[in-house]
View 1: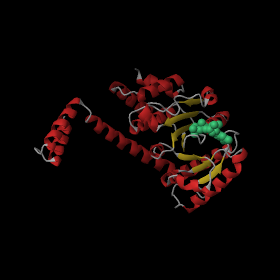
View 2: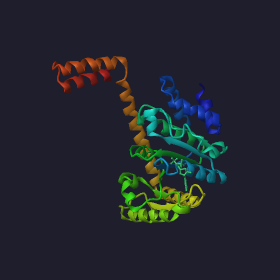
View 3: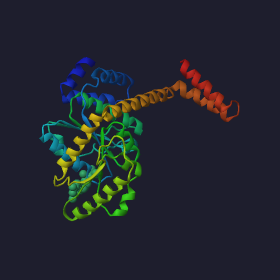
View 4: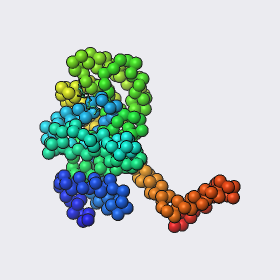
Length: 324
Ligand code: GDP
């Protein structure tokens, strides 16, 4: 594979080249890994998109929202990529966007690019591959990258490590539901968006929004927030209502963070995080060779039979590994 040629095609916005590159980063083969790493390095980080993390429990309306919101943005001439971190794909091999006929309008839009969550054996693998897909889409000069995840806790944390702004989508509900949202996720959100503010649900949605606005006011102010953020808003993804307001809020937030230096600081901290994750992953991969596994098993037996002290055996093993 000609890395320089591929990089040029991606930067020129060739969708096929982008799709191929994402397939490459998702591959588990060692030679593919090496090529993927080379490609990412060749692409660099000269273009920055607005990366929007989006989370919400199944049924809250994520795909409906992404489609309506995405269509609104492409209608303004913006190029929109949609990626997903799906923790369930780690277990089942399925994925939130994989089986979908959902978002079919957006999928047909030439200014949109939709990619399902990679299926992997663990969340760490899904997270790293999604982070790399974000980098590829950014190099391909998308303006907005939506990174979707299902609200189960752990996956929000990894999405927050690759997003500039984080949007939590909620359904209208009674006040007692407020406690149902984990505090950690609330603290991560820049915008809490109550969807389905239409028809019979409209009044409940407005009440829910007021509840969350109240709860947000009680939270400690974060340094990365201008006055009035995080905010709670209502939308109807189905009826296309409130979406321009969400977009305006996200842009206001992004501009403020850029002006105040938070944007650069956050991206720098994220780069540090992914570097450390990559080091950890590489070290763990060293444990996964036939030689390391058999040596580990032998030492483990020796320890369990009392022939060796656990700490001493571990130290010996790590020294051997480093010497290899
Ligand atoms: P996801 O599982 O979070 O991706 O949710 P979906 O987008 O698949 O939506 C789940 C259900 O909620 C579908 O039946 C949608 O038609 C419905 N839905 C989504 N957005 C809205 C909305 O704004 N208003 C109403 N009334 N229903 C909605």
